Image (cartoon, rainbow, N blue to C red; front, side):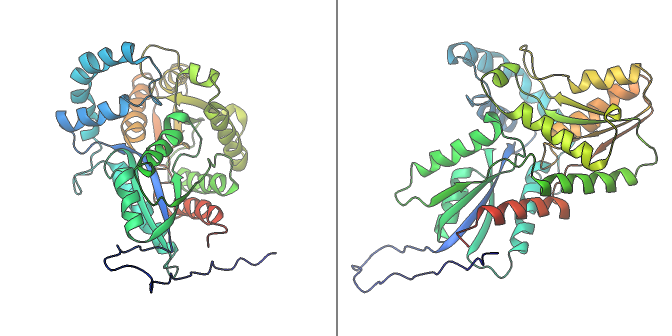
Length: 353
């Protein structure tokens, strides 16, 4: 096995610098965890700002501006902020006055920092694609700390243009404004990484053992996307299916007990199917009494898991005859979750450290 040696740090010769030369900290390596985002509050205006930024992203809504802009500004941003604000309020972290996605992502960065104790060259930070902390502000903060190399880590196991790509777009826009750009790498998707599959299996096994029932069916649910995005070449659907299959096989669960579905559809276009909510309703009506949902595509619990899956889908199941229901938490900032992030970061930093 080839030995990996630390990169030698060479200090510049400052003897020829003119008076007043600006400080140029360098020689450190930044690791920037990137996630989707969360509103700054649950009231109308913070929700409106967040939804406008999110739904104005052409990676998310691939419709002509002339068609989408009036719908967004005249209809959606008038009625949706209040509704979604109420949904966020049901999961809000009142102690920190923030959404759980922000709380968890911060903790992931802090715990990853602890995993690199003793490696002072590595600086770990985190940012959100939408709202705060912004990607631009955190890249600037890393550079100010002397990071002339930055690894971007989109926390999306399965690649999609509407998630990983737009997170990188935002980082690249920030780089375009910088005179001295750091060297940048982007961690790829990890939908079939053995470390990720193993962590999911260990987490699921532990959480299933805590239940007071044995599920008749288990649904692996992933965030949906319009079918036309798949037709345009987005690999997301295939990567979700592979994650689901590998996880089921790792757990040794029979195919007839395991389903793969897609949630959170928006608008009138057909989305990836089968739909999670309709599948939950169908199973309940067919006589399934004990059901478990797990969301392998989410690196951190958020509105779509805590309110939609553990809330809305629980009610759908129970209102149609189901009796026992459980949503198994995402990897979050658990030891298994940090194991995955650490493994990805160490692999992608090869040659830099």
